[in-house]
Length: 155
Image (cartoon, rainbow, N blue to C red; front, side, top):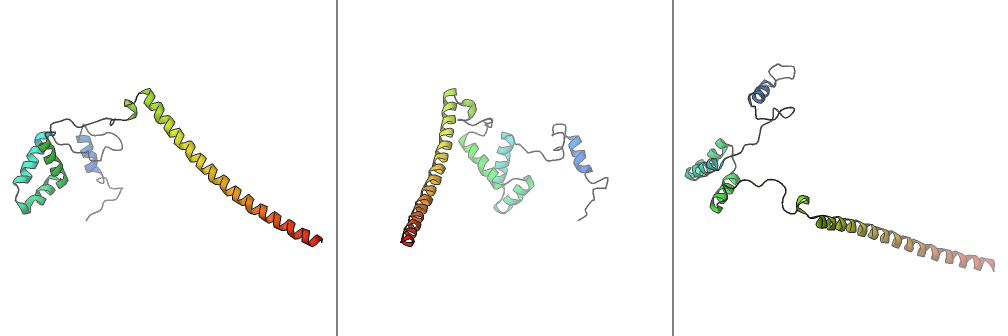
């Protein structure tokens, strides 16, 4: 395999040529990167039909040639069976997101978050207090022991 060093004028020429040839691709630092492929409903139907018509031992070769995974075929076949292949893809925020909440719902979520935070702080404070109470109890027993010793020595 031949490696090109960064000083070579042909090092990234193929990437730059591909980026300049594609007017719809990204501009800037991402210009040389590949763009995600998308398939129309007709292409998906054609590829599923071609996959199904391909003999058993040649299916992998067909997938490699088309640069697909068998999960694509499985997903597209299920969409064809459900009749949702022609439906436009869902975009945007999912249901229940911040944009669809009423002000009251948003306030409830904010208060629940604050409540959970305060409960966690309370739990930490209670644990800290319990540890200090245990230390004070041990210290009190130590002081009582020392007082008992000093009273014996005073006799």
